[in-house]
Amino acid sequence: RGCEDYPLLAKIQKTYHQLQVLYTVSISGSDYALDAQVLNINGISQEEISRLQFLPQLKKVRLESSRNAAQLISLIDTCKKRNIAVTVAIGGTDYDLNTAKLSVDHITTEELQLLYLLPQLKELYLTEPQADAENLLQLTQDLRSADIIWEKTILGISYTNNLTQVDL
Image (tube, rainbow, N blue to C red; front, side, top):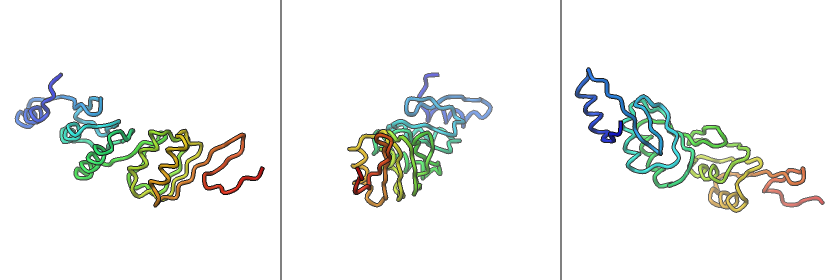
């Protein structure tokens, strides 16, 4: 416990087959066992990305936050090269990066930022978003190729952002 010289640990394990070497790999504030198949990521450094190679059974990386977007792009590229699936977690559901159509209830501002990682997104329907109007409008401007509609209820009546007139 306490050794973070992952290349050395991997070399020891490879050299001494009869010796069972157990260690954990620290990534994104969590320690993962060698047999970890899923990582939950809330931000990651380039050094931590390089540690993925020491998790031989890794199958999926689940992005729960979009902090440090440049690092996330690097992480996604690394995962693609290693055939590791990458998903974004929004509203308790995992979505593949190739998701084209999405409907989400009560999306938060932090979850809203994860939508930028979905390059194939074409249709987005948000019901009662918790994100503020400024972030919703910015998303609509930034993702012009997507049809984005959000619905809010005011005094018991539901309104969508594409509404052009209101009967009073």
